[in-house]
Amino acid sequence: MLKKLLIVLCLGALAGAAWVALKPAKPRSTPLTVFCAAGIKKPVEEIATAYQKETGVEVRLQFGGSGTLLSQLKIAKQGDLFIAADDGALADAKKMEVTREEFPLVVQKPVLAVAKGNPKHIDGLAALKKPEIKVALANPEAASIGRVVKKLLGAEWEALAAKAAVMKPTVTEIAADLSLGAVDAAIVWDSIVPQFKLDVAPLPELAKHEEHATAAVLAYSQQPAEALRFARYMTAPEKGGGVFEKQGFKAVPGDKWAARPDLIIYSGGVNRTAIEKLLQQFASREGITMTTVFNGCGILCASMKTMGDSSNPKFPDVYYACDVCFVPPVAEQFPEAILLTEAEIVIAVPKGNPQNIHTLADLARPGLRVGLCNAEQSTIGYLTRSILKSMNLLESVSKNASSQVPTADFLVNQMRTGSLDAAVVYGININNDKEHFEAIPLPADKAKAVQPFAVRKDTAYQQLSRRLLAYLRENRASFESAGFAWKGDTAPVKSAEIVLPEWLKQK
Image 1 (tube, rainbow, N blue to C red):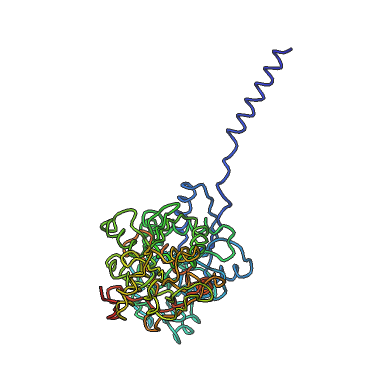
Image 2: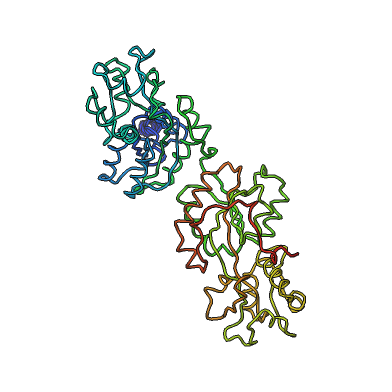
């Protein structure tokens, strides 16, 4: 009896083991839903299949004209990505607030397609108007190519549309009609021509126009990190970019592929209060890691110079300095900057100002314990030294400098312990502690530090870094609540063209 029971148990265990082994593997995440313009169906299908094979994430594709898909998205309010065939459809999506991050995929041109060898000798708009020529057009209400062509042809569109043999909702449908001989000509994207083995006839009205097919993360995606990861995969030159090129598309280069990129950021210490939480939020949404180094800008620049050139894998992708004066030393690696914020420089004193300090000259009074930052290690120290030198106060105030540290927050901590009577810091350093500190203003023409944000010119994560900049710009309130003045809507400046005032050039 016991022997039979053991046999039954063993058989049951084997059956259970067999069931476990045979049942299908669970997908790694909820499937991604992608609404894609019909004209780029073939490469996107190949890319999605490769992505699923590599990551285990299922990608469900729905194809149609960009206009049709956008109408569906407006009503359904679900999905993860929208791939528009032209810039206009993407702009409409942004106005409707259904999209967020954008990833340009390919550049496309509208062209006049004809059968191989152009047997009807079609050579322009006049030929298309001939009664015997059958023309296929895409519906401008449904397909991007139709809307673009309608705009480019202007008044000529109505006459051409009136005689069109067919008008269909997607570019692939009219290309198929042409390839089957149902029509003599069709206006399509240039990328469609090789797919259907067609030829191109001249049509000057379209010749210089270009559009971008772009993937955008949908605002209501429930898995934005996975959607962003697939978008990065589609644009990576060694992944989706290669598939687009292989299939005759002109791919827009994206970032190097990494399932979980590590973005390296060097930031001056003053910026920490405004950006630390934003960086965490950005990294979580993108599904990436960040190596963030906060320190005095002199130390950061010295660290970069020690690394040699930017081929060092630890060289930062992004540099957010405390002031423009610390951009020229690394202008070769960071040739362009956005002046994002501005911070006031002040004299910090204990509440009630017990030492009756009102000017920089007062810091030279005998017996005062003054805190200054190190001029070689930090922006605030460099600026303080330059200000004092320009006012002939450097030597007299430095005699009272009982502390010279790399960042201003160290000085504030020393003031809290009572070991300093005053310190030259950023107003931001004491902005949230007004119960214990007061700010004495400095001369208006020398009391500002401007914080530039720069992306390394040869970073492998160019697009990711620029999305970070866009994210910071979207969160202006975080900077202003920390005490910064906002400057982030200005145009980029060339790092090599930054001109410092004469008083700041003194050594």
